[in-house]
Amino acid sequence: MFERIYIENYKCLVDFALHLDDTTLLLGANGTGKTAVLDVVYGLRKLLTGEAKVADPVAFPASSLTRWQTHRHQQFRLRIRVVDESFTYALRVEHEEGGSKSRITRERLLGQDRTVLFDCKMGEVQLYRDDGSTGPAFLTDWHESALARVVEHPTNTRLTSFLKAIRRTVVCTIRPDRLRTESTREDPILDRAATNFVDWYRHAIQENPRRALPHVDALRPVLDGFNDLQVRQAGLDSRALMLRFSADDEKTYRLRFSEIADGQRALVVLYGLVHLSRGAGGIVLFLDEPDNYVALPEIQPWLLELVELCEETPSQAVICSHHPELIDYFGIARGRVLRRNASGAVTPHSLDPPPAGSRHKLSELVARGWDN
Image (cartoon, rainbow, N blue to C red; front, side, top):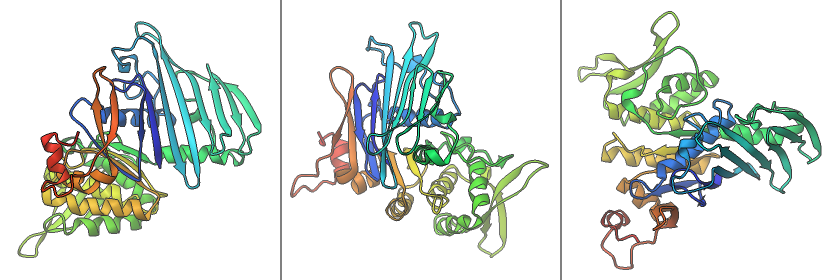
């Protein structure tokens, strides 16, 4: 799981350090950097899976520099626990004046005992074996992550366990109106808006078809009249996600994924993230306002399933939300409120519980601005 994130000189995040639990709720007014935190995690994942170069819009272009800072470098550090080992990953990015060139000047991975597992300085890579001894050295393109290019080998199992954990990380803001119904391929990585959910779903059930059963079972009490869902042939090279429903006269009918309501599509994705992740080695979820499009009575059952996932499997959930159900459920023990100080920088704070004898729930205090 992600234990700590450090960010320097990215949008409104300056010398910013955030500690995370197995479930964490991020709160704060608009413009306090909640989504920026998720942008950083998404950018790091895109780099470390080899899907992006450092200056790409989805990673760390010069436009992401903090406007009131004068220096031109950004720093990011992650502390991630994988099974019994805690890794520290560090990345330094420099941008030339005018934003014409951006490059990675330092990339490093340390193991639990501070053993160096990987070190890259100005495009010169030095690999180390699991026991800390020196391995191969090579030159690389400093516009992309050199760590993402390391091939799995029996001598670097610690390094590759870190990379596998990064690849099991999902950063998502569900946009139901952008979800595609048809799929032409399987995709192991869900994109930022979940538009390729059907591709991701196909990959998940192809690896283990039994994962689809608990997903369907969870949706039956949530979607009125729902029976099951299937990926069916839609063209020569495409498949479509179809849902089967029962009418009052017990007749059944099918709807394409695009034909159900936005909230129903959001629920299919939310329950899919929970149930299709079981048995896959765990998952780390960074979700931005997952309660959007979902009715008030619908969020609590999904929330309980999410908590069960994090308690029973090596999984983690970090959620940005203003929803009262989530604030009251997570807020006191697992809530982090982000606030901007006079300089414009953002700092995280713990939430205090309501005063003894208070008649207000924590969500009501937050809504009134009394949580300071």
